[in-house]
Image (cartoon, rainbow over all chains, first blue to last red):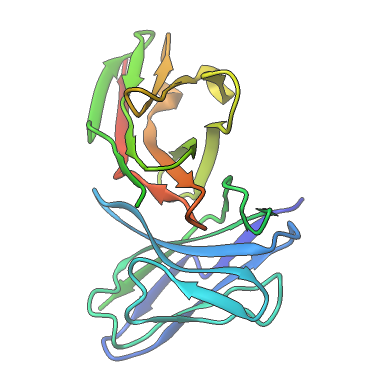
Length: 116
Length: 113
C-alpha cells in the first residue's frame, strides 16, 4: 500500500539537543511538507519542498531545518534554537499541477516530540 | 494572503442529531477548499474537497459541504451523526498564489449518546 511513513511516533529530547524526524513516501509525489500542530492552533507550515534539492520556508521555519536529497524522503531537524519544540509534527505530500501543489495532501501518522 | 477561520472550537451534539461546522476563508483570488478529519494521535484524512463546478460537495462518511463564494464560506454538514464521528475537523484553503495549504484552528466534534 502506498503511503507516508513517519518515525519515530514518540520522541523525547533534552533541552539543547537536536533531533531529526523521518518522513518517507512511496506515492511518487513531487511535493512534501512539514506541519506543526499545537492544541487550539491548527496546523502551521514549517517547510515545504516542491522538487528534489529545493525547499522553502513556511510560516514558522525558525529553529528547524530540512533536506530533500531524494524524492521519497523529507527529514526535519528540530534544532536547539527552536524555543518551544514540544508539539505534534505532521508530514504530508501532494502531486503538483501546473507548477504548483495540487492541493490535496496525504498525511503521515505524525511524530510527537516532547522536550524534557 | 489566504486565511481560514473556524468559528467554533468545540461542538457538542447528541447522536443522530444534525451538525454544521462553520468555516470562513479569506483570499483575493480563486481558491480550492478542503475539510480534513483527525482522530486522536493520528494524521489527517481528507473528508471532501471543492475544486470547481457544483458548489455542493459530498464526501466520505455522509458529510457534505457547500461552497458559498459571496459569503466566503465552506460549512461542513451531516444530517445524522454517530458516536464514531467524534474527532477534530479542519478546514483548509489554497489559492493560486500559494504553494501549500493553510489550515484553520480546528473544531472538535463531540458526539454524545
